Image (cartoon, rainbow, N blue to C red; front, side):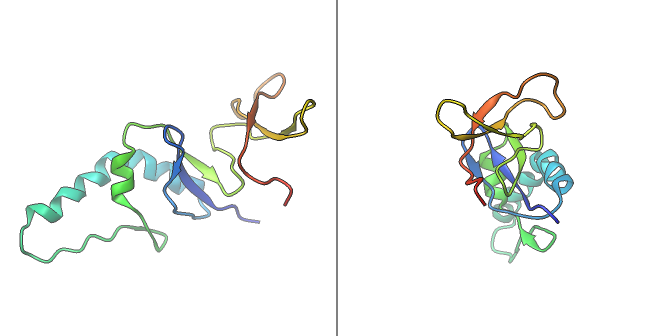
Length: 124
């Protein structure tokens, strides 16, 4: 079963709104973001000439303005279930309130899971 991945800004809590089933593509998009946003001023620089900039990943459009707005922020691939690529993401039930949390520690960590409440409905 494939998992859809997007890009989330943990600094602002906003998502790019792009979903593809390749987390490696999302990681590469984050890495290349500083270079990709350099294309934005090109439209204004050419004046009256017609220029259409369409950048896609696996046929899905990428919002370069969103990437520009979030440059320097904590951007990370996030799966469709709310898990971040750089975290353990094990689902943990809080013994006090029965809320479902995700482990925010590094993948394959030693010791107990660290709790972080998720906004994702894990009942599905």
